[in-house]
Image (tube, rainbow, N blue to C red; front, side):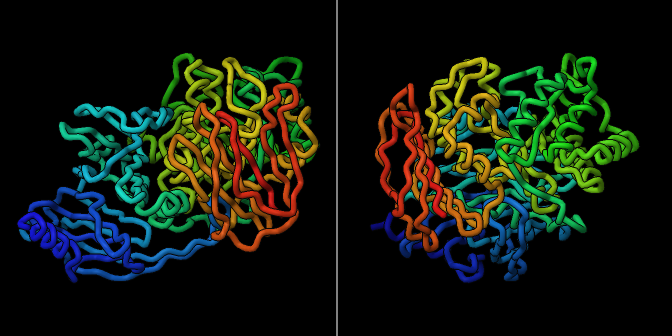
Amino acid sequence: MKKIILSFIAILSVIATDAQTSPNGKIHAQYVDGQGLVVSYKQNGSWMEIMTLSSDYDRLSSTVKQKVEYDMPFGKKSHIKNAYKKGCYMKSHGDNKDFLIVNVYNDGVTFGGPKAREYKVNFTAAKNNWLQKWSEAYEEFFPLNREQKANNRYAYPALFEYKNKVFALLTESHMTADMAATSMYATDSKDIFCLRPDGKESSGSQTLIIGSLADVVESTLVLDNSEPCKLPDISWIEPGVASWVYWAYNHGSNDYNIIKKYTDMAVELKLPYVLIDAEWDHFLAPYKVEDAIKYAVDHGVKPMIWYSSSIGWINGAPGPMFRLNKPEDREKEFAWLESLGIKGIKIDFFSGDTNQNIKFMIELLEDAAKHHLLVNFHGATLPRGWQRTYPNLISTEAVYGAEWYNNVPTFTKKAAMHNATLPFTRNVVGSMDYTPCAFTDSQHLHITTHAHELALTALYESGIQHLADRPESFLAQPQEVKNYLSELPTAWDETHLLCGYPGESVVIARRKGSTWYIAGINGTDENKNITFNTEVLRKLGKNITIFQDSGNADSPWKITKSTKVQSTFSLLPRGGFVMVVK
């Protein structure tokens, strides 16, 4: 009885009237003596603890309800709305200029302050987690319940699971040029972490998305909590699909004939873009890179081109290098690219979360926009809301993606499980340049099926979607597959998670105009039956094409037409499906 009374008192303290509750009444934050700032989630009339922030900001001095509404040229949704209650927490004793801003949104909580550089957060109420080991390029797996050792460093986003199918995803947003990014450091206690910036600068807003798995996957909180668009005109920003040389030809971007082949593929498949990757500064004679660019432009394909950031990997790295580091050099280079008809730049090999990287990336975005250049960051830190502020940031890598088939054999056996984890982790927080869809092999074998690979193109959100495979492979596919790639959108009007669990399976529906793309994959090595409900979707059409695996290695596709949406699939090990509903 004593335990019951104490628990009841604790619940009463969490739902006190002077605390912050989200406009929809589902999320709650309040300072509790002896604990700190307690974040709770309401489910079936009961509150459950999600996270506690150790804090001596103990006095809620003000609250105000606010709304956010804006449009995006690409992403999960074209029109976004959210609401939150903004609170300012002060210290009962101390500097009156020191405060903590806590925003309680309908789908999560953000917190940060001008002098709060380090936070200690407690997730011990969670029963499972998916943590990524930190690396400069955020290229690691998200294993279930990774062993945590004191002082080990982990990267955002971090996913936690609670009882009753409640989840929370920790990441960061509202990152400006004077800041350094934070990451997570394990303590002696499981699921208790210190969040620290990589340097002496202040950090952005720690961002916690809370709810069902669908709430997490569909959330735009990282964008909602970041600065509005700073570009005066975004009409020139055009998302799309690109042909991409690197997966099959590591050193092919200095060869006119190889670039020509990928341009021809883009023409035949009606893809808007072709990417000229690294080493084009040493183009093979008798051609120059300008010849490859002109060929693409003359054939109605928009070229994009690669650069090294020249602040990360330098010794032994491919070029071109040191062309973008000084403002005057950058201006000259961007003006030259614009004059040639280049539409975007892929910038690679940054060096982590320091202010040097953050500041440089924002400068690149601002200067590129002046010359109508899209930007794709590779070998870079996780996106932290910049796509709303600078929507010319068309995508970011920060993912262990398909290019790793080119590097190590590790990816072969782990790819399917990893692929079925990314929609719940990395891709939640921003566009993800995974470079999906390969039916043949790179340096190392892939064992995911054809339908699994095709599904990744709609399952993953990226403003620029680079297709990994060889032109010969894509052009040898059935006409229905080629038509699918020709029509594939990379900007969506709405997104819904239909079913799934990290590492096991996932089905996502995305709408563009009046067409729905419903894509699913099996992340396991066993056959899997999946069933999902389509009630959350708007009225569906009756012109339906379904792409599945046949199970026959000699004829791998099963492509059917239907007038009825299929909601049950039997998936092969590491298999998948796509439904296009018009």
